[in-house]
Length: 179
Image (cartoon, rainbow, N blue to C red; front, side, top):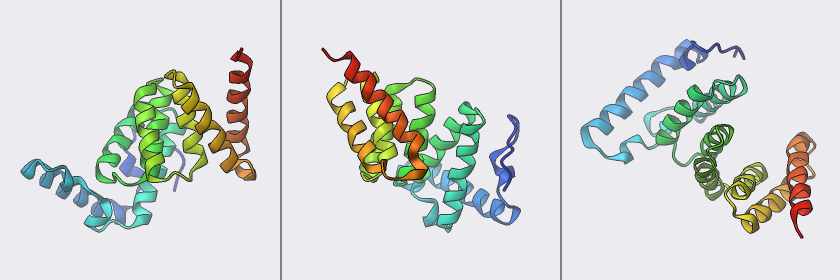
């Protein structure tokens, strides 16, 4: 899969052709069922329409590439739609939170991170981001608790050092602000 996605490219262009048709059918069936019934449960789960877990992961990867390339409006729309059809996927909610966070929409970011946390309370990165938003929203005790817990969860993971340093920096700044 290519890492290049220009501002005008469709996310579908990154999906292999053999999967693209299936995903388009799923999308059409999902929205048609929702339009006909008005029932949000019609939007539940790509997997219930035959998409594989790999297809869902591939969709998340495409959205991450949009975020990395600064295509935040596209990423926001992408993850909002994905959250509707994969409401129990914590990674989707985490990524939507990251997009809102980058827009400095802390209340929306907090709601997305909180949903990711509810779905997977073991993920330290989500807890760090959740804590950071809580601090921005004036929820200092909760924010510090989530930052500390998140840091403890990832501290021994060598691949997550940048997240650990980020959390340590925020905690140190908060300690400097305390009387």
